[in-house]
Image 1 (cartoon, rainbow over the protein chains, first blue to last red):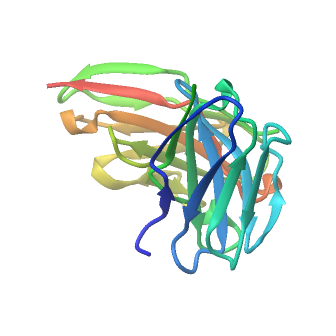
Image 2: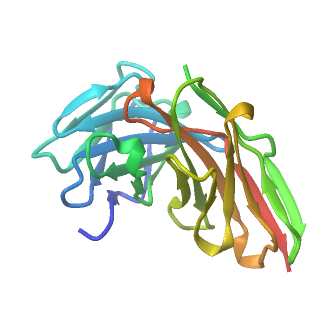
Length: 116
Length: 114
């Protein structure tokens, strides 16, 4: 597509429920990134995909967080047993080529997750 | 681990005033540097970037940034702001050893009063 698409745009869930966040990157972008933006905070790196593999998942906060990418395209971030501290805006970005930092990212609009 | 510091969390200024936002990073090797902007209700957009060459880089909407290697800084400037520059600004660094990810600063919220 023309841009990075994320869905849903907003998600309210009850504490303890599982949620899935979806990211559809720009066609042809091999690198995909997930970040988290909490209120008043900067962007916190979660995980990086190159194709379908995740060479860097160092930012995932706990084993409740997982992500996958299929077909070198769509990625899903799953949060199990959500907690209130998981409330944040989850941002996805894609980049052309393996050295994503050199090209810069194109960001999606994010999913605002609220855990009540 | 690399880190990025943005000194000002909030900046309020009037139209036509000059703007300078500070950014410092901690990494001794080769870096790629970025400024992103997030206008109210919009997604993050690339404002400008530095990879190599002239340390003074010009971006969109009249913004520029200067890379000073000795100070580990990449400050953003605009000589005369407009109300439409109201946004949150993020500095980001990609360091070779850190692989492909960008490390972002905490952001600076800029409010331009008309």
